[in-house]
Length: 342
Ligand SMILES: Nc1nc2c(c(=O)[nH]1)N[C@H]1C(S)=C(S)[C@@H](COP(=O)(O)O)O[C@H]1N2
Ligand SMILES: [Mo]
Image (cartoon, rainbow, N blue to C red):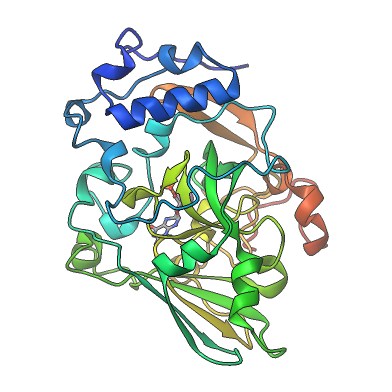
């Protein structure tokens, strides 16, 4: 059953280690959820680095990120009633973002993001489209109606969270791109700025920049979401500012962060992790408890709630989104098989 480890920092007051705005924001959240008591009791992660209120994980939102439309109203269709939200502090301090590699602790991204200045940002569109486009991202965000969606989030490494994202459907963006009928896939390329991203400078064995891709039917599925914010505020840099994909039925690595290009293609593009490790990471990479990773089971996961607090739970087919995406994958194993790569 639930394996709950109480944080040793439970007795600290929230105000002891978070900024005013972060504190207010969390209170707001807790109130919205009607869970008044939990925010305080489960607070953890007041590590040495985060004790300075102006230099913690919650203070890594770019100052010039547009805030029009924040906080966005919640789309009630996308909720996760069986789970509590993961605490904002944990979701902003336990990350995967290889552009900011940290020898020692890969997940500790936020102390490395200060040189990264996402805005101003341009998003380029090319390939099988009526005409090539270049958008200023601030203007694009301001032109989009923002909404909030709570999604399950499952990393291939078998940890998971429950996160409220702010953004717009990927299908809305794709419509604006006007792809032509030859487009079968869309490729996403991420930021390339070695001077701001220590991982791109140091970890030269990776095929930078990060890139990912989807089939068109996946990309226009209602679930596919472009996030520009989380927990009611713009994205912190470590979570993929200024924009990233969230595809809750796929493993986390299918959702590229800090995207600069969309390219519509006539055939299936390669992807970063598939090119690095083709025997471990396939193109589809749907969450599926029936297909073990070659090195570990995917039948269960560590659902992370706050620093030091997690539950071991069963992983669901398509991460619980069978109803939305099941029809896209007639060949996806519905009962246990060996470690096949899909
Ligand atoms: N550009 C880029 N996007 C990326 C990654 C990355 O290293 N670089 N990591 C992926 C992985 S493995 C995961 S689990 C999620 C993590 O997102 P989070 O840190 O916001 O939880 O981002 C994905 N997108
Ligand atoms: Mo991941």
